[in-house]
Every structure is written in C-alpha cells, then in structure tokens.
Length: 115
Image (spheres, rainbow, N blue to C red):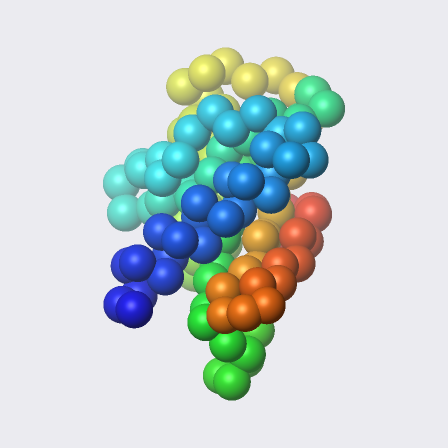
C-alpha cells in the first residue's frame, strides 16, 4: 500500500474514532498555503486541530514521532487562518492521533499535544 493510501485509510479510521467519542467533524484536509490540517473538529466547546499520523507497523518508530517542529509550525499557521476565517472566540486545542493499521489496529489519541 502506498503512502497516500495508508494516510487516507488512517484518516478514515481517525474520523471513526473521533465520532465515536462525540466529536463533530467540521473539516478534513483543510489547506492554507503549504500547510494542511488533517481534521478540524468541535468537542465540548473546543475547536480541535488534529494531525493524523499513520504507519503499518512500529518497525521504524511510532507515528507520533513524525510530527516535527516544521509540521507544528505549519499546522499553527493554518489553524490561525481558520480561526480568523470563522471568527472563533473560544478555546482551541491541538491533538495528534497516532495510528498503526496492521492487525490488530491500534491508536493513541494525544490530546493537547502542543501549543
């Protein structure tokens, strides 16, 4: 399976997880300039920006380890644009949803991963 298909499958899995926890999905693959936010959701009066990282196995590390400072900076820039565009006046949060797809599939939802 190529990287794009793995990522898409991981994002679909992430949406299912989030919806089962009561999150309302507002956007998927929101783009601003060269940045992309995988999922933007609303949960308990928080606007949440979620980076999804997916791997087939843990042979080469954990998915969440692939969220580096450059990625965080781009996410924050895109989030700032989104917040401004919808005139959001309440709290926000940045999460990482780390997913391993191969059986058995596992995930780790890291809330408030960075700010």
